[in-house]
Image (tube, rainbow, N blue to C red; front, side, top):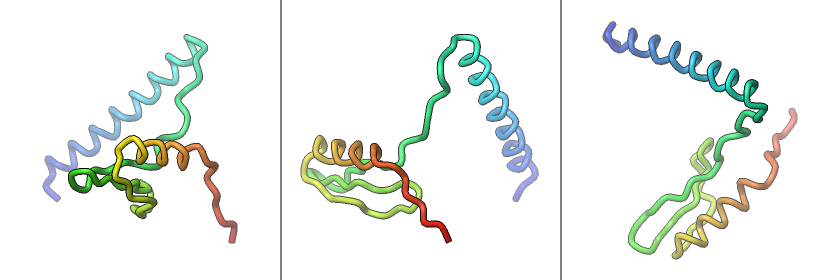
Length: 88
């Protein structure tokens, strides 16, 4: 990879760390909790009148719908469910 790209990647990493620290400090000063987990499911428009719900981590298709509202509601229901992890 070109050295300029490497420099930008390192610079971005530093900025992300500083941004995270600043958000943490702000939440302490304002007695607000830091935001919780990120969104796990995304609604994608596949074609006109066709929407899919995809899990962001694995890329698995979780459902296909003809209404955007139905797809969003389904994604929110999935997001509200706890994350189950298998212990090996």
